[in-house]
Length: 209
Image 1: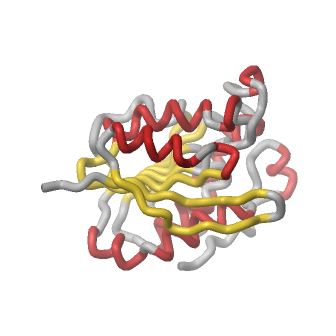
Image 2: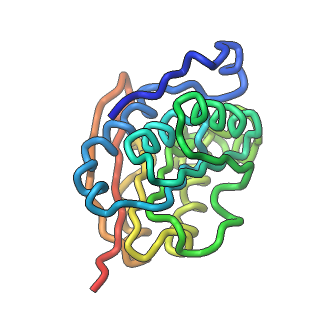
């Protein structure tokens, strides 16, 4: 998979929008690792929740040019940057300022991708609409993630796939149990230690009989 060009972004814009970092590229690596499976599924609609600069969803769109890609972000500047990143890399795309995936119709997305705000913080730091929304995760670094987990069974297509990045402090086993209770199975796609963080990308899916 190609990494999207980012020449269009002014460095000063990253004062307001999350700059692509190791976690962003780990998600791209995870998608690349699962490429054969994804190509066999021929996804029509992909959503990245909390897209920031848009590099992850744009990378997906570059690998799947026939897939329509959408992103959401609570930070309006991030929505603008995501749109520009996709356009610069010639990806069919739209971006919506939205709280997670709350306003979409049910069971329409073949793929949902989420690099959440996973840093453990006080709850009071969650809920902003500026750059803090990209990293402040509240208790266990999971307050935002847990809200999306409750939406996934409704927003994901019945045979869809959900890719989620976590760190060890988020207690991935608890997330796996939550999704299992919703009827999902999981696989660990990739795991990597980055400085003092153990990052992991999990893939959740349902068995359709």
